[in-house]
Image (tube, rainbow, N blue to C red):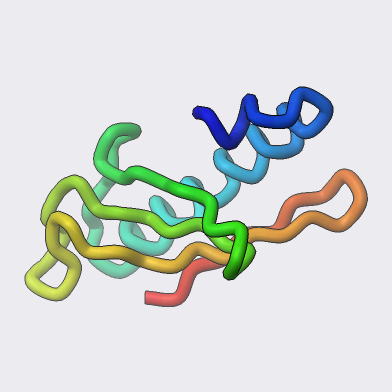
Amino acid sequence: RIWVKDLESEERKRTTMLFSAKESLFKAFFSLYRHPLGFRDVELVWDSGRRCFVATLMVDVSAEFHQGMKVKVGCETQGRHVFSWVSL
């Protein structure tokens, strides 16, 4: 939340980036493991040095992806468009 509201002129873009990154992660886990993630099952933090989100799993998804594990979620903008991706 702090990152989203940190720069008022970027709030809308950052909110969209956060939503897009979370959706990418949710869809990747569901398509591979048939495990639906809830809103609070993942915490995303923007890593400005790596220019990506770092997702921390708050629940176990599988033996391979367990609570506390971190996953990189790429996200970038081009004009009004937001592109996000995750590789599991």
